Image (tube, rainbow, N blue to C red; front, side):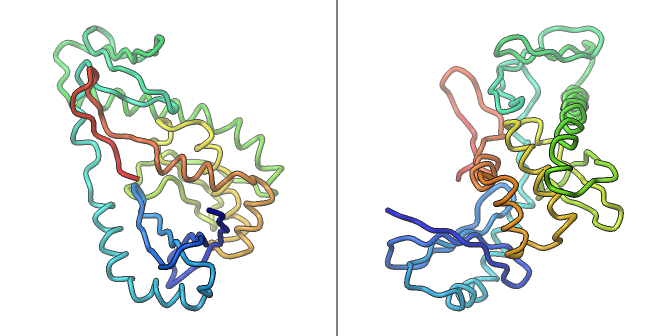
Amino acid sequence: MSTASAYLTVAGLGVDVVYKDIKNLHISVYPPVGRVRVAAPRRVDEDAIRLAVVQRLPWIKKQREQLGNADRQTERRMVSGETHYVWGERLRLDASRHGRSKIHVVGKTLWLTTPADYDEEQRRAVLDHWYRKELKAAVPPLLAKWQPIVGADASKFVVRHMKTKWGTCQTESRSIWLNPELAKKNPRCLEYIVVHELTHLIERTHNEHFIELMDLRMPDWRVRRDELNDAPLAAEEWGGETQYRRSS
């Protein structure tokens, strides 16, 4: 089935449109950040798509709100045997060692060493701090690479937890904020977010100009975006038992 794609802004909402050889129009909201996607028959024009999205806005907003309010970390108990992700790699947590707080990766094992009296929240804090350090170390080389290509410089970057965004930019201060959850994703995804936010320093909205700039600088940005939004984050039990994944 052949397809074509477009991008629309409807009532301030970014909408991915994919034209297909299908009979009916379908609107979907994807986790984790509520990306809106419309699969439309080729015969349907842009005005009809905009109208369909407007008519479905209450439902779309409800879906996005539910995604935003979802607690996606409740399965993580910070005990040995859980799956955690580091730069897109699925690793098994081993928290059996006690001593001075530290984290290191050996093969497919994520070793978490903490004092014996640390509880779940304290162990989680150690891991979260490590993710932040990983991200902070990965960003400067990407900025050095992409700022001259994009043609925009960020004054600084900030690593900050955000409930529904992977990244954002403050155009007034020309600063970029990045979600530490990106350290769990494939490095290609972080690179996409960096380019995305740098491009917003030139074009604030997701309009046609923004899409043209992204297509020019990073032709495969849509593939990277979908990889970012589809990859699992929730904990999994090793050994073939219950698995928790985000649906796509």
